[in-house]
Image (cartoon, rainbow, N blue to C red; front, side, top):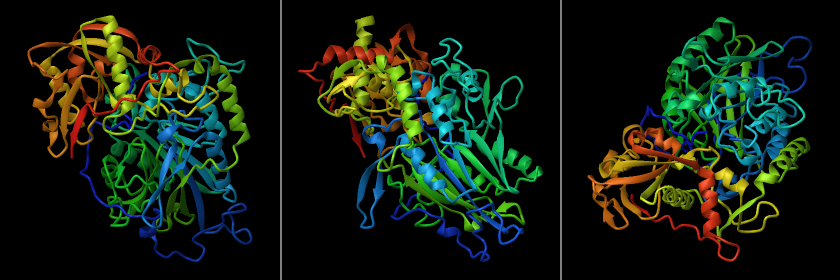
Length: 605
């Protein structure tokens, strides 16, 4: 499986940053024009008004989430918290996530809402913790079935193991090489995966359904699902072999017309592409300074160009939380939502369906993100599911691989976890070839940090194989290649130029490599050439350096084309083994590893 950026960011950047930020729960106040008295129709019963005549307006509940990434158990550390803005302007963090709690929250939200749909914005699987990843994400599909997910778009991570494996997750069947994990055959997803813009190169047709229509008592809502067009740049070549990824806007507009021809006028787009809100708080007011002005990134341009026939956009990919209104091409406000990641939030959107027109009365749309708190009762059926798969994973997952003296976080431009992985790959590289000089790690391959507090019975400070798997779940190999010093410098500049100009992907570097990143400058100049040093000496453009990377970077992934041009390739073991071996060799119960200081890159802002 490939290592990708977290959040994965696309090759294209359609729009410049729009600025704003304030407080309060984001809703569709900007949409609030008066409707007739019965605009918010029946929310109980069979959807009909007094007598046998249907109410003209019917509220339809849309529950949505995105980027679960197989996080069945509550995520640890910062990955399992959200930031909440308080009335006085301060913030607090709330522990969130875990499908046992998500199930309870969704089920409670659906009560007294017979017209309720649950949809997702992609990356339900991939980059998953051991409990799911070890079993090729069958546990997550089973959990989503129990959550009564109705429909989801594909995300880039749905292609980590290729189109055939995605088809197996959809249709069922035991794994082609590992067989069945239990005495029951895997039945696949009860819900459709939508892949409108992912085409088979030979047939030129979508590899899965492009859209799906929800129907109840004459109410019809269509869903179109797409992933970002830039998926091939952030997924391994094997994962997207034989596939074409088309423009998101053109694809959605095409199938919106097709749905309209079928009489479906209420349409929601599920888009695995997202934005960057001006606030890290899930409940900030995105529209405080005007529709959508508190969000930037590719979703803004997408939203501005998707046909007005689409009534709402459920998005994802950037792992951010927002509820914004962005004007459609006709100048009318339209809801755009994202529920962060890892099952920490869900979005509750009310779509008021007009039976007379068959469309959504967009003036009545409202939406808000809600925290998946862990203060509610666990859903027993999900607890049972987690227990079943944990029992199967325990012999592998519970093995201790090292000890730490404190949390090793994966936050920040340069993170302690990123440095630790780079150091581990450098150490492993030197075992393969003593001439190895440095290691580079893509930030998106660092899926989590390591927490000091024990997750189970292993004890504080103990790092288990399962925790290591959560950090590095992709099974990339550690590769050695030769580069000139000029190429090393160019690779570092590609962090902030080319396809990474708008959204830098800052590589995590091994001990001994230092440089300055000047964010007050633009493009490649943000990497200060004269500051790049290895063990205190300037990089010599004419010299040859032996560099360790993972196989994803060695293939030029994440826009690092120069790293795909190395010579003298030597392929080693998988990256998790390299990390586990490093932790085992450099820590003990009495001498735990101290988290790296993350001071190798000097950042000027």
